[in-house]
Length: 122
Image (cartoon, rainbow, N blue to C red):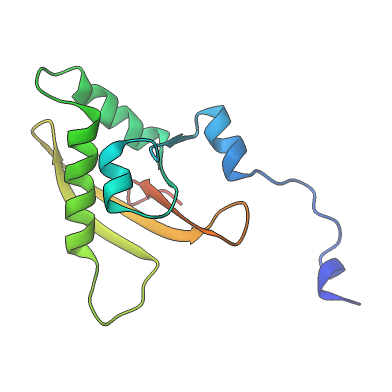
C-alpha cells in the first residue's frame, strides 16, 4: 500500500481558485497597498469582506486605506525570532475594533498564499 491510496480515492476537493470564483474568498492581491506590503497572493474570507464592504459605505473610507491599516497592524503582530504560519491582531475599521487572523500556507500549489479571516474561521 502506498501513501497515495492509503485512504482511498479523493471524494471531493475545493481549490482556492474555486473559493475565489464562488465568492467564499475575495482576492485582494490587486489592491496597491496589499502589493506594497505582501509578496504573496492575498485574499480574505467573505465575512472579512463584509466588514470591509460596510466600511466602504462610510464617507472617507477607501479599500486601499483599509488594506493599508490591516497590513501595517499585521506586520507589527509578526513575532520576531519565531516561525509561525498564523498571526492574530486587532485593527480598527470604520471606527470598530476587529480581531483578525492572517494565515500563511500553501495555495492550490505548494506556493505560499495569505488568507485574512476572523479568528474562528479556518
